[in-house]
Length: 422
Image 1 (tube, helix red, strand yellow):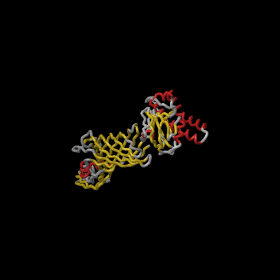
Image 2 (tube, rainbow, N blue to C red):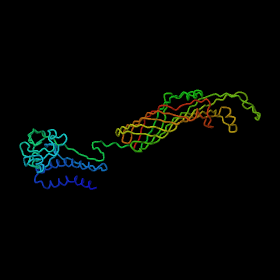
Image 3 (cartoon, helix red, strand yellow):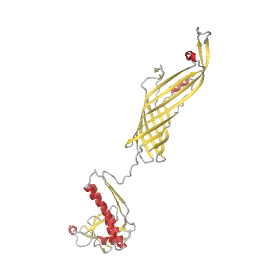
Image 4 (cartoon, helix red, strand yellow):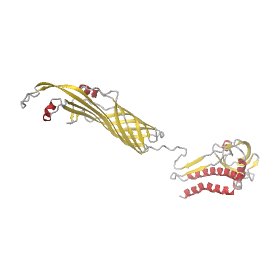
């Protein structure tokens, strides 16, 4: 806490210093010069604060903004500086009692490009002595960027005169963040919390011959081998770091009917006053077929945020699927007192058979945003189905149908549809 308090005082110091300078300034020119000094001082403060933050350790998070309030129309050296001290004069073997000590240079600044470095001493600019910091600031303020003047310095115990071209002071904002933070990194787009999707799947089964075979035998048209449109919905929630858990389901069904003639061999019923169903009979019946197919399960997904508007993802569906075929046949002539006989006649009957699967469906997804909460979702997936029972089952009695094929549910599924996220 003591270190944090010290840093707070350091950060507030430039504001207090500016207030004092404003009151102290006697005219506009002097205020302008001191504003220039404030800019230099703020840059030095930024370096000092950064060093202090480094010493706090990784368990502290501190963000400090330092704004350099300067004009791009003034000459700029790009040096950190301070007044000479007697101790420094002796240490550098400097033979004079005036000058400004350079303590560092800004990266890419004019001073850095001209080879100035820490512990160099600025002696004069364009023949004008730099007696102290205030004099140095006033001299520099009298020039413009890109002007070239002679500058005398004392470096490594040698006096040098170089031709120096002033630079232009940049306006910048420095953000210092500790605990592994990188101030140059962009803030990541946050993951949506909840998503809802309409999923119209185009599903292409690898092998549809088994289904078409039994439908043809019952005089119905084939299913489309190029695919069928399944309608579905999905929802999921963010559980952290771009991982989502949710659920989905999709289904398809069709109803078809055809006319058919059933020929039966009648038998005489001695209990009836007349010969009931004596001899052969033809019944004109209506056959109906209902085919249903679908799947659903738990979804596990990992989203990658390339930006707010483009969001690819990888995922998998774990669940169950089924295929059901139901045939009914009726001539529409029902008699309450004679239902059993009518059912036996094959003119009024029904059967339903089903095959169930456990499914695994790996998938690749891409989300493209339209609005902040609405976008388009595209998905490509492959379904793998496994059935624990051989063949098809007749559902009314849960009987295995002899000689029924091992129909699979494997196939490709594609979808493009709207999605909503919050």
